[in-house]
Image (cartoon, rainbow, N blue to C red; front, side, top):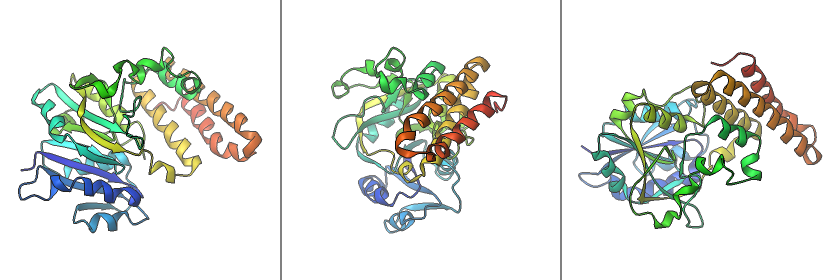
Length: 312
């Protein structure tokens, strides 16, 4: 039986999925493969499914967009290996799957992420490993403080800048939130925490929530620097209309906040989302005109509804 199941969720990923699968060829087509590979497609309208089928890779073709979390759960249930590697279509595997798997010899390990390098060949510092967000973290994020003042006392620990020079790391490091783009977890841990929460639809914060559940269950998550993937980032997100992108991100952010923060923290964050959206709309008005309210207005309405009591 394969040691690892590689689950890839696609949504209009034709530009990336071919190279992603080609990079995995050495793991998937031997007589006794180390990994079984499965693509779960969320109703792509481009040539994604043709790219997958043309490479002889197993495909689950959803008739509708089930959302990222639901597709991951589908993939886990449809495979049998004791370890699962969740890989984004734009994360092209280079090496180190064995090093990722090795940390699961410790039964206290629930998840492990590898080193992601960007188009410039450098590690994607600030993204490939983070701490779980506090209420203050997300308030700073939605108000734009982290962008205006990067490395502030709230942002610094959140983005794990304290890890130092990433290229100098040689041994696994304990982190709270490895990036979901290249994340391995054990089937046992996935079952123990109830899988990915499908309320985070269609995208965002489902991987953060999963890591938070692993931590709450007393399981460790690691950054494994000897496992590598080249990562472009945000390829499917770019296809979303700006209005939908804003609504989905803030909707998932508030869903996460409702699960993990106190009622007071949750309402403070609702106010911050409202204020931040108004500020962005005002700032964009001179070059975009009234169209900005079509983008930011629904987010303001969402924040107001959640503040007034729609916590669940």
